[in-house]
Length: 117
Image (cartoon, rainbow, N blue to C red):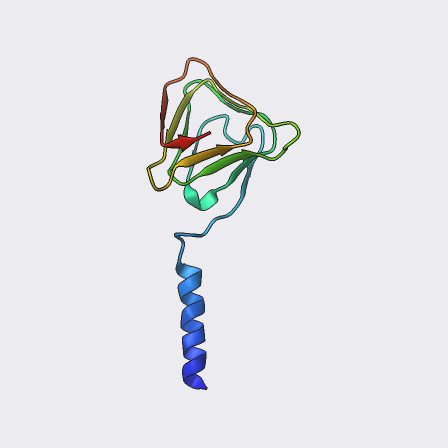
């Protein structure tokens, strides 16, 4: 009985510590990233609750394995970048942009690789 309890406890701790497949939804509201942000896999998916704007002079950095989506299927929200945008996925973990309205780029430095639109 004691060995079964130890094995069960070990399995629970192992699953809880495995962050490779962990994810949490992060809701993005207007004003949240006006001054730039870095989005990583642990906060994914990033769900836009409204149209989102990044000001000139700031960077939105999106790491591999991140999903960005709109909270509304009936009125997809847009991402407007007057600053810089860096989306860098890889072959095994692309960045996925799902159900967004449009992405507007103005006076921006843009680096996008291995992204799925």
